[in-house]
Length: 175
Image (tube, rainbow, N blue to C red; front, side, top):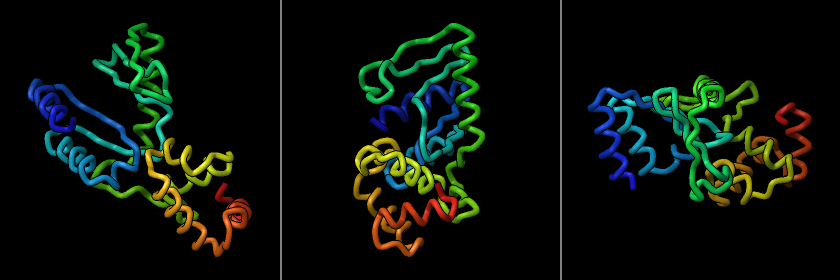
């Protein structure tokens, strides 16, 4: 799929069309996807990542947006939106996310507590009683990666259980 996308991306860039894309921070952990993102940057696209995306969207010429029919299952299909008020709202959401996203080639910044955005988001999702599997799906991570991240957070907190980690994280203002 990436090779097919590269061909189309190259054609678009050769026509002088700008490309800005936002992916999940988890793409930084996948060699093939990260290489694709770096290739996009090499051909002049702008690529950034965030810990979580509220919805997938494609926007063309600031006039047409494609939004998923089902945000939890983007394979179901997309709906084309061209009504200006809706497109303006989608653009505002995209720009808001873009402004806080981390460019490919830079590392996400740790906050005042020393947490990466993805770690803070994971804590928030688990505090909302999401399972490791659901939190991982939301963040684009495997269950194994979620467990590894949580183990590292627990170690930093000096917690022996996830419950204790939750209490300590709350006391330290991490939640």
